[in-house]
Amino acid sequence: MKPDLFESPDYYMLDDLLSDEHKLVRNATRDWVKRAVSPIIEDYAQKAEFPSQIINGLAEIGAFGPYIPSTYGGAGLDQISYGLLMQEIERGDSGVRSTASVQSSLVMYPIFAYGTEDQRKKYLPKLASGEFMGSFGLTEPNHGSNPGGMETKFKDMGDHYLLNGAKLWISNAPFADIAVVWAKNEEGRIHGLIVERGMEGFSTPETHNKWSLRASATGELIFDDVKVPKENLLPGKNGLGAPLGCLDSARYGIAWGAIGAAMDCYDTALRYAKERTQFGKPIAAFQLQQKKLAEMITEITKAQLLAYRLGQLKNEGKATTAQISMAKRNNVEMALKIAREARQILGGMGITGEYSIMRHMMNLESVVTYEGTHDIHLLITGADITGIQAFK
Image (cartoon, rainbow, N blue to C red; front, side, top):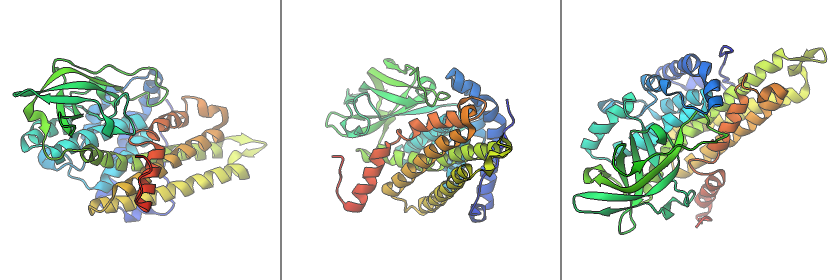
């Protein structure tokens, strides 16, 4: 395994805007990624296997619920720290970042924001420590971009709820101890339920043959007359806005995470271009290669500024769903384009597992689709600026 020589680009000196705590969080995460992720991730991606041994490390660096208060086991960090954590983890691998994103924004966040105090005390400390791993059940086989059409339902049986249905494309599902599942009651209203592994009728078959996010465990959530205790209902919020509020937090993390993938591709391509000699000089001396590299650092810098400002708005409680959608869409598209350009700089070497670029490129093909597709995010912006929804 080649040593991880990554050097983070900071063309506009954004470090000057970060607090000492921000830098400490980022640097600790970067060091952990270099030590625990980079040496193994290519092998696990080739094997299409999640490296479960990193779960404790993710917990130790505060990647599980970083903005959840310390009362419940979280790190109590601000939203920029959360973003920097996701950036550095995705620099290692999008699938590893997905594991942390789901745990933080899609499992811990709804329990914290919509759950009871008993639910918070029961689940959050164990999720923060990695003792429990969670998944988020919203997407269904017949309902992706239209989650409001979900068919998963639950009935009130007096002393419990009876849950039936299925969820698809669920990160962490194969090994999750709990799932935050969104389902309709008998009146058609969407509610969140905490489903625990071991409940009769609950199964989590793994999804195989993926070309993308190969080092992430993806699966289904199947509910066949699952008896869910009534105390496992999240009472704080219902309706489609409840799961969409979780997605806002996850999409915010992705907006930062994609920058990490882009930075890794850029750094790899820059280093290679300086070392690779053709026609008697490094290929970095040729105009077309400089054009590619100059455009990469420009787009990364723009994305960094977009994410940083969004982080400020999140800290102030002012960030809107549409603003988050814009950042997610822009930054993932930016990263995907940079991965493709970086691969060209490396030529044939760019498709090998000796370098991270092709893995990032394949991963980003999932990131550009999940948590709201590329096109849906465009229409969220369109609806925001025109006042007219084009997807209903």
